[in-house]
Image (cartoon, rainbow, N blue to C red; front, side):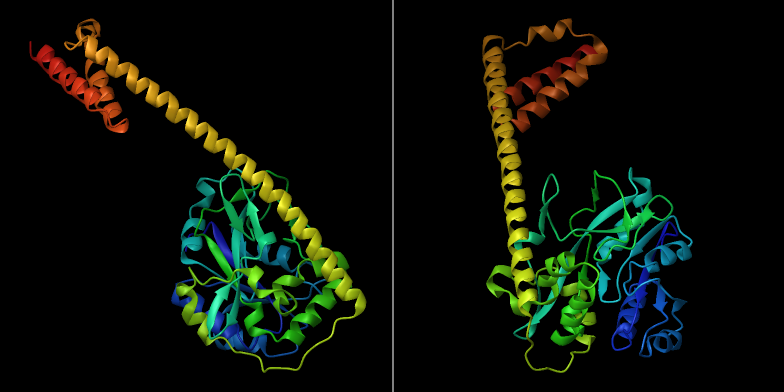
Length: 362
């Protein structure tokens, strides 16, 4: 692993699956740094010690990972960059390979990385394509991009719930397609555990807690809108199949206020997403228009050149081209003939090539 970055994982009460996660990292040659919340009520620390994993205990200032754990872990990593992932997340191989050289290409302090929220449905693993999670990033849509790869000493750390744990100014950099990580919170935690987590976050910020509730409470949403898909999950199959499944529990009830907040935030986010989609479509239409204009100009160029060639079969103008430019001129005609699919221009290029060879020999 390139020493320019390290995977840093804050964790709490993950004994049921952290061993499987660590073994999955070892299979691909990665040794993460675990920051273990000292308030864990299970054997998380013991599991990591038994695996001889690199772990450090830490007591955050509050009841969320953003309350100091991200800053502490990033600085403890001892590398220029930190790739922060949670204990219920896992990176793609392509992400790790790309991150190994990112410092050579990065102009900013932070990279956003796509995340697939994974679920188990009808005996197979799928991920959600919930519309508000699709974000237009200038040249394509990215699925649920998260600020996770960052320069340790160039961001300002914060303790805001449901945030990256730090602040940075736009424009944002986005990792290439295929560089992503999965999130399997909905596989290893029961509905009751997930609802309790939302309610805990709501004590700190009701709006943010219920705005993101659709990620972990899909039971409250229409499954058809998620457009569940499974492509790209094969490389995670061994890990996903090794994860524990919590015992089924009875139903759960939301309070009247919780239902109102969830509906309000969901509708608000769909509205924002719709505006974003419309803006993306406008940019795409503009790009298509530019492509059509370029195609029109190329066609005009092709027709003009073919007309010149028909009028002057001997390409007499090459006699006035300086010797150093003869070969580039011939190559340009050959290349243009291929790109425009013009036999006449290609033949002119061949004649020009033969002309420059004869001139050089003479």
